[in-house]
Amino acid sequence: MTSMFGRRQFVAAVAASSVAAPAIVRADKFPSGRVTVVVPFPAGAATDISARVYAERLAALWDQAVVVDNRGGGNGIPAAESVARAKPDGLTIFATSAMTQAVNPAIYDKLPYDPIESFEPITRMGTSPFVLLVDRNSPINSAAELTKLLKSAPGKYNFGAGALPARVASELYKLSAGVDAVYVGYKSNPQAIPDVQSGLLTFMMIDTVNAKVAMDRGALKGLFVTDSERYAGVPDMPTAAEAGLPDVLLTTWTGFYVPKGTPREIVQKIYDDIARVAAMPEVLARLASLGGVPKLMKPDEFAAFTRSEKERWGGIIKRANIKLE
Image (cartoon, rainbow, N blue to C red; front, side, top):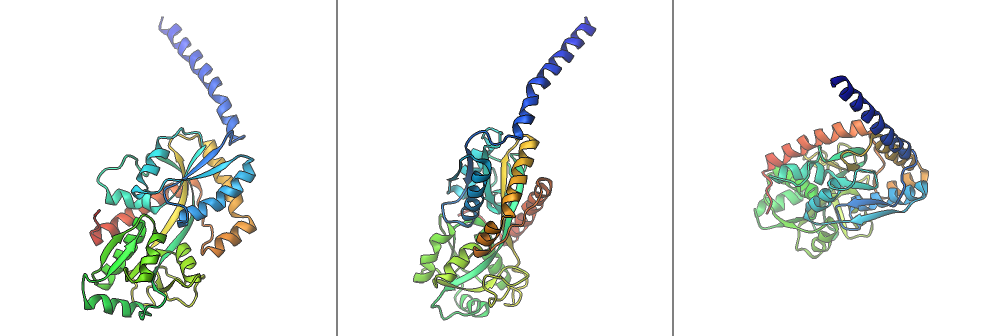
C-alpha cells in the first residue's frame, strides 16, 4: 500500500510539473497583456517622470500597452500595498523610491506590506542627491547665510517637503547645522515650490530632477547638493561639504519591483528589457536632461541594496528623531 501511494504521489508530481512547464515558456513571450506601472507619487514627481521614460520605450519593445498608474498619497503605502497584493505575473510593476522601501519602515510601527518580503526586486533605475533650495530673489546666497538666519530665531522659519525622503534630507541638514525650523507637509515636492517663492517657506530640499526644473525656469536657486561631487546640471553649485556641511551626504533612488512570487524567468526578462531601454541613446539623453543617468543593478544586487538602504535611512531617521505629525 505504501509503495502504491508513493507511486501515485510521483505520478501526480510529474503531472503537476507538466502543467507548470508552459509558464516558463510563456515567460519568453512576456508580456501577454497590458502592463501597469504603479507609481506612488502624483504625475510630475521625479519617480513618475523617470518611470514614464521607461514605460514609453518598453511599450514599443513589448508591442503592448504600458500604462503608468499614479497612486499618490499616504506616503506611498496604498500604492505599495496594492502591488504587494497583485497577481505575481509581471503585469504589475512597482516604480518606487527609497520612501516606500527604506523610509516608511523606520517611520511607521506597522505597514500593510514588507519592503523586503512583499516584492521581487527588478533593478534600480537611478540615484539622485538632494538640492537645498531658496527663492530665486532671496537675499540668502549660501548655506552659511541660511544657517545664520535660522539660528537667529529658532522655530520661526519653515521648510517644506512633499515626500519623506526630502524631509529626511532636510532634517539631516537641521541636525548637522544645529538649527531649528518648522516642517510643513505637502502631497508632493513640486507643490511646495510656490510657497518657497511666496516666502511662506524659507527653504526646501528636493531631488535633483525637480530641482533642475525649478532652477531652469528661474523659480528657485540652489545653495548646495547633498552629494560627494558637484551636480553636473548646475556645476557652479557647491556640494554640502564645500558649503561647510560634510555630514549632509544623502542620496535617494528609484527602482522597479514586482509582487513576491513572480517567476524568476519573468523577473529576468523585465530586467533585461529595462537594461536595453536604459542603453538607448535617446533615453540616456532624456534622463541626462532631467539631471540623472541610469545606474542599474541586477536583481540580486538590487535585493541586497534594498536591505542595506533600509538600514541606512532608518539610522538617519532615528538620529534625527523624525516622527509622523
